[in-house]
Length: 347
Ligand SMILES: NC(=O)c1ccc[n+]([C@@H]2O[C@H](COP(=O)([O-])OP(=O)(O)OC[C@H]3O[C@@H](n4cnc5c(N)ncnc54)[C@H](O)[C@@H]3O)[C@@H](O)[C@H]2O)c1
Image 1 (cartoon, rainbow, N blue to C red):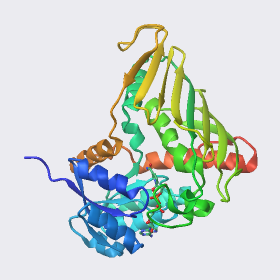
Image 2 (image 1 turned 30 degrees about the vertical axis):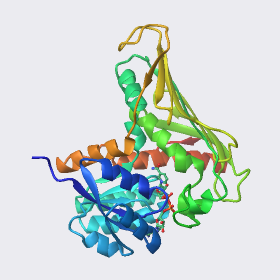
Image 3 (image 1 turned 45 degrees about the vertical axis):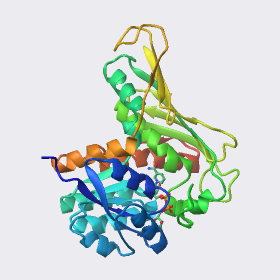
Image 4 (image 1 turned 30 degrees about the horizontal axis):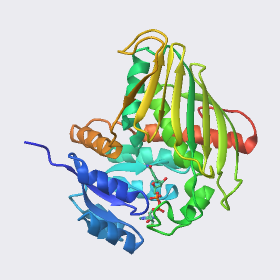
């Protein structure tokens, strides 16, 4: 008999919430049971659309015995407090990125979940891109040789309305503009995904960061343009480039990994990836570009994988520690931008 899907309570019904609700409607391993938001209209509309209970009370959601996993989709500065309440109520936690706005926040989330004996996972669904899995397989099989360069780009355009309503305008808030509440701009908001993806596919940790960043076009506290160079533990060099005022740009959200024997590159949303190797390996001929196409359902795959791990009482596929590691790289990048000096990790 198929196992009962994990019951999910969604806290935060703003911009990203429908992505979770839609994925849960498709996932076999998990289903949306209830949703909660301090803004009643946001909770109500999501609950009604996805046939789930809705409330403005965290206590009420956490008291629901059908809720086994709490997905936190609120601003970064609230993640710690909500995680603590969820863990004390005996619920597993899946937290949106960034795990927290600072490392003490992330540490307290990890400690609270450990103490309560519940799992903590970070929402990094890009690991489930077909292109990312192909790259990981090639890197692990040695087809690329030693990794020497990792390029991560997120060049996008965020309109004025984004800063108070996200892309959908579901809830009006001000946290995105505030560095204390959001943790930062395009680097922590977007490039943290790429940074985690690079770590997941190569297994390499960052040891040093240097960054130039600024706020050029937007009336917010956080950076709208940043460029960082990274050094990885094997001496590979990394480039992180992000903008939220890349006017007219489209599709410049990509990852490229270069090794001593080949490279892989892909756009995050293109569903396509290309590889080139100097010695035939893993079904790829030598010295010929090969491309692959993928149909992605990253959030659905993420939930199914997480649910299977929770049912089997295994560690989640993406942990709280993973969320902390990516956050630490981002904070090193910001510290470098603030001090105009290279910053060594661990912080
Ligand atoms: N994984 C992704 O691709 C992705 C994309 C966008 C946002 N995010 C992350 O998801 C989180 C939410 O982002 P968003 O864009 O949906 O923000 P949002 O402001 O649109 O929505 C957040 C919602 O949380 C509610 N809220 C605030 N404090 C609360 C609290 N204490 N208890 C309950 N509800 C509360 C707000 O009323 C709002 O409706 C952020 O951490 C963000 O970085 C992730």
